[in-house]
Amino acid sequence: MDSAGHERHRTAGAAQAAPTELLTHRAVYDLSLAETSQAAGISGVSGRMVYEFTGGPCEGYSVAFRFVIQVSDERGQTRVTDLQTSSFEDPASKAFQFLSKTYVNRKLSEETRGRAEHADDHIALDLKKPDEREVRLSGTALFPTEHLRRLLEAADKGETILVADLFDGSETGDKVYETTSVIGARRDGPGSPGEEDAGAVAKIGDHPHWPVTIAYFDSESEDTGERMPAYQLGFLLYDNGVSRRLKLDYGDFELRGNLSDLTLIDPVTCKQ
Image: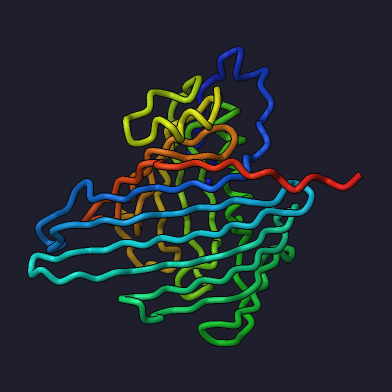
């Protein structure tokens, strides 16, 4: 996620450290409005995000994700959006299955389902919803768990920029995002928690972490000037894959996500 070629030298300790296995876990984030512009017309936001990461290195990884947010406008009207997704990525990150449903005020608004597989210089996509069709996506976009691993590998090597295309089955199910990740300096230990995430941070353990910001660009955009990201995601990323202190920037408004609960889940062990 590296065309810019920027990197920094690792410390001696970081150079000797091997990447940690991804932690299977369930993380709950409480969402609140951090900033908003007058143009957005938003008076308040509340919500919750739940991310469950299960499986193991030999069986592959599954993700169950739910994002529920209530937005109030200046006229006193509210809109509740409920995004529910589930996905499975095989151990080699060769194939990726996904299902996504979006409800607006409890009514189904969008549904996406399909299976994507790497094939030579492209991704073969078998899409079932919103319509049934086969799609050839050019390039070698990464799937989500593969992208996370590349990000952790880059951070462990002391690299500060990672550029990669990403396919996660979002929106219409055939969208590829161009992403640029900016990785900050390594920080040892879990960091200083706030009152709202102290209990959850204690469960992370003594793992190093990095501040990361990922900008997502629409690969189909025809904008020839200075490109603006569709949205940006900032967070603290631990070497076991856990994230906290989220910042979701949608342009007109920005959300803050505090890690309020963390449940550790036993991984699926490799068969002997």
